[in-house]
Amino acid sequence: MTAPSPLHVAVAGDHPYSITIGPGQLSDGHALAQHVRGRHVLLVSDSDVAPLYLAGVRAALMQARPDLLVAEHVLPAGEASKTLAEFGRAIDALAALGATRDACIFALGGGVVGDLSGFAAACWMRGVDCVQLPTTLLAMVDSSVGGKTAVDIPAGKNLVGAFHPPRAVIADTHVLATLPVRELRAGLAEVVKYGALGDPDFFDWLQQHADGLSAGDATLLAEAIARSCRHKAAIVERDPLEKGERALLNLGHTFGHAIETEQGYSAPGRDALNHGEAVAVGMVLAARLSTAMGRAPAADEQRLSALLTSLNLPTAIPTGLQPAALLARMRLDKKNVAGRLRLVLWRGIGQADVVADVEEAAVLAVLAG
Image 1 (cartoon, rainbow, N blue to C red):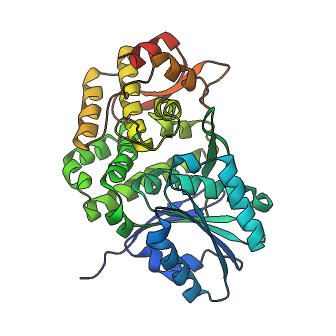
Image 2: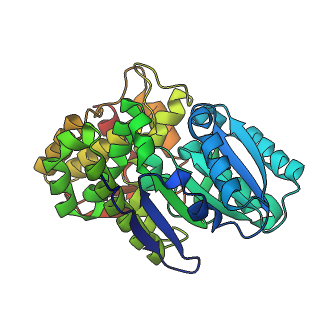
Image 3: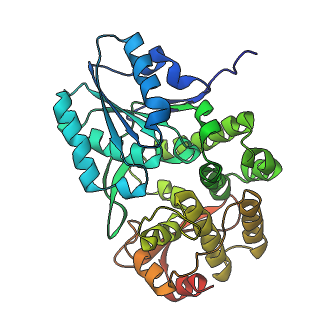
């Protein structure tokens, strides 16, 4: 059977690049190598992904470009590695390689690898190329696209970083077959976000195909990834530095980041949520707050909760997290202005807004359930 043709999404703007989505992309050496302008390549991955794909990517690159000088840098897997210390180790790896200004970093992994690699690329010699090779659904539809790079510090997620658009994004849908079910479903939370914030037709499509998406149907996932990337690309083109409309992409994230930070970026266990799960809960909380403020119908909040539940995603704050502590974390969100909460809320499915001066008492009441 002939493999399906890859899907392509073009991201325009001051730094245009392409997103390629399809099976077998990581083994296409010429497709990978065409984005390397010089000779120095640093392959960054993590301890979960590297054993599966790193050697194959390196071999594909070397077959296409035998002149390349390729080094590898592998992080411990997990959000706990997205730190300034690990960023420093990536910089050390670039220095040991002797990477010049035409070097290229390939970020092979999920959001942690992509964010840290992009930040290292932004900082090395004031900016070198980075090609994103996302290996999770969440990274394919969100963190690999748009050029937001960062690391975490104890005070909060993504507080230290830079805008640095990738040279290309190459999403190999074959890798989703090896993705743990929990990680696949976590990525679907970000897919739902695009329907919730701006596309009611896409939201309806997700409701119709929830069972197939949750089961990992390759054709449905490729379509969901492409549609999600088109939504994000269009918003990023209009607002590359998140001065306005791009903040809508944070629907659910202010609540979700507070949950993640209060958990201490621990390895997700029975009660601790990973990023996608936290965003799912955050979207429900944002919808509930919108309803409480009289901005949106309760029926849309219920539709959102039902869709997330059908995708086996959580919709409630984990036990043990205190509302006041979560609110304190939310005060550090980068969208806030002059110490006042500024949240992404909605007027119903497909109608998100950035709302300033949200009363803390209303937020606290929603956090308290």
